[in-house]
Amino acid sequence: MSDNGSSPEPHESPPPAETRPDGGASRSKTRGTKKTKKSAEARTAATTAGAGLVAAVRALARRRDKKRVDPEADSAEADTSNLEVVASEADAGDSLTERRAEARMGGGQDRIDAQHARGKLTVRERINRLLDPGSFEELGPFLEHRHTAFGLDRQRHAGDGVVTGFGYIDGRRVAVFAQDFTVLGGSFSETQALKVGRLLETATASGLPVIALLDSVGARIQEGIWSLAGFGDLFWRNTQASGVVPQISLMLGPCAGGAVYSPGLTDFVIMARGSSYMFITGPDVIRTVTGEEVDAETLGGADTHAGNSGVAHFVADDENAAFEVTRQLLGYLPSNNAEDPPIVEAEQSIDPDVAELDNLIPEAAEEAYDVREAITRIADRHSFLEVHADFAPNAVVGFIRLKGRVAAVITNQPEHLAGVLDIDASDKIARFIRFADSFNIPLVTLVDCPGFLPGADQERNGIIRHGAKIVYAYAEATVPKVSVVLRKAYGGAYIVMSSKMIRTDVCLAWRGPRERSAFSMRAN
Image (cartoon, rainbow, N blue to C red; front, side):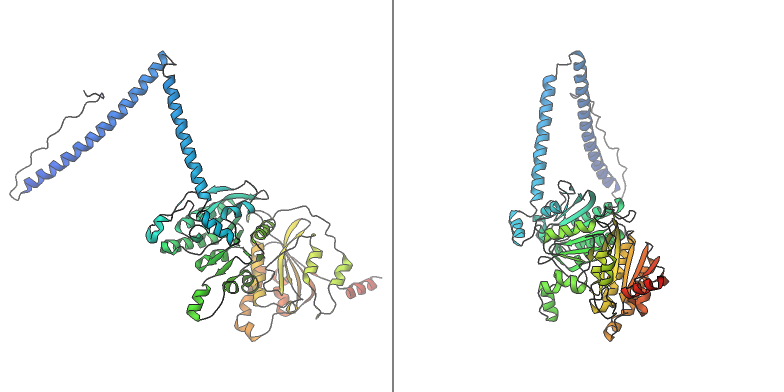
């Protein structure tokens, strides 16, 4: 019997090996010796572990029996043990506090100062200003990348350049992810893809809007294919969330290369003027390949994408204004496609001033007027939020409220190109209709259109293909649809602009002053 109360097993000798002419006996003997040695070591380790376990059990049993005789006998020992546990927890707490403080610093104070010098907020400052105070709950704050090539093993930061989590905006729960430019330029990595992917998956399953705060140089090229694979996963998740939950992208810094496709897949893009840029290839690459001289602002600035490309739906003067637009926009949208848009109490009666409306719309078909004046006089006071205001100005789209209920309004703009439909206007209208239909927002269409824009350039660039998108969007929409012909609707434009023939629910015609007067005379 050993000191620890266990009996060691006796050593077993290996069985004798048979003699063989080819020397097999000696080889067998060698293998047997190695096997026996290994087995003996394993048994010794197992015996030691077992002995330790038995000793621990017996010690606990002795302490239990001792307590039964004298319950206070080991109180001093218990107090000492508790103090050690408390001290250990305090040390762990201090360590966690330090790790959290380090994570909040991102890439360090120098890079935070550089971010502020550019007129940009840090990632956590942005989240705090966007969300309701104290509502943010972060996910995966300490995740780091696993790569070592190109010096990445010396550039590990908690969170790996992206902050993800959930919070509230005006009391409504939302999912948020924000890139941290102070950590490796906010470059998109395998770990970023993992964190953002988990957030999007949870938000889609839970029916929560997704808001992205983007500020990144693009892919983390040091990770090679892993970064590109992360982009692919992100794009896939964007498409799966499309039409299920609203997705809003805030461009608060550069966004280049493959990174631009994720915001391009979301429902709304908001850009901050002077600090945000989007392009697939930057000015330096264009200069090298084509010799063309162009600066970043002209190539991919906020005004370029709002007025020319149509990528940006809203432009804000600074980051704080972008947050305000986001909160305002979210007020018109349901959290997911299974809910109705939020209803608010109308500030004032929507009963229109008939005389004012009659005077607003000229009798002459060729005379211009601003259709926004008609929208604001029909909708609840101060409820019109225009979308894509600077893109394709011959069409106006946006959100309004009618007695507190949200509706999507689509109109022609006689003040620009007489309100004709062209390629850009067709894309603008069709995309907006499809979004509204996905999220249960009724359609109100105000028609004053002379037709499609004639011209060889329009035909070569596919006006037929783009115009057909409007027909498809209206025809497939299942939300309530109401159209009002304000003054004129000619040719193909009459058909595509929510006409009775493509199954609009209610089609109305606006009567001008002369018609109203004639009707009054007949009635008398």
